[in-house]
Image (tube, rainbow, N blue to C red; front, top):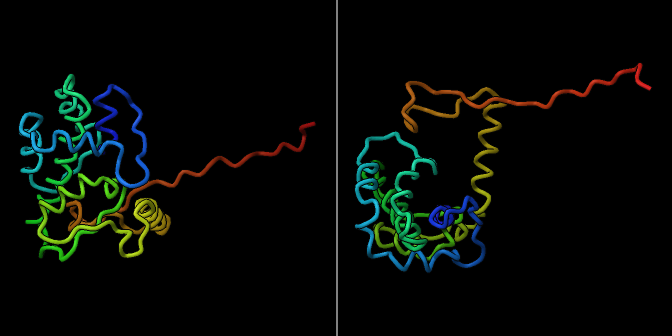
Length: 187
């Protein structure tokens, strides 16, 4: 998300993929970390205040990032990094009990600013999922593989308790490539 925010603030569509210890955008996130009130506070509060289930994709941020035009990479990175941490904190009242530990996967676990914001906002230790022997880069791919097997077996992908659907719902569509025809008359 941070890479996308920085690319969007620069007017680029490329997101890049941070590697190694920390994101190359961590300094940008840190720069405006304490100045979040100017950029999109209402958007953040309004979205977090909506009842679940709810979902965002990167297109949901277009209005917000348009407002950041001219404020630079740091503003976009700081806002979306803080927004990410705030969203995690906002989930706490919806859980049956507070987690004893938070494990972070994906590229965000390499962003020291995001990890620090999570640690500040959550009342339990925060660590990369790699700390328990899982590959934080592979979990998303493994989840999609799990869902793909459920599609192949005709099993539900969603349930009332997870996304608010009225009953367990199947999803996905198997797309198979066309079978190549061989023509015996071809020379």
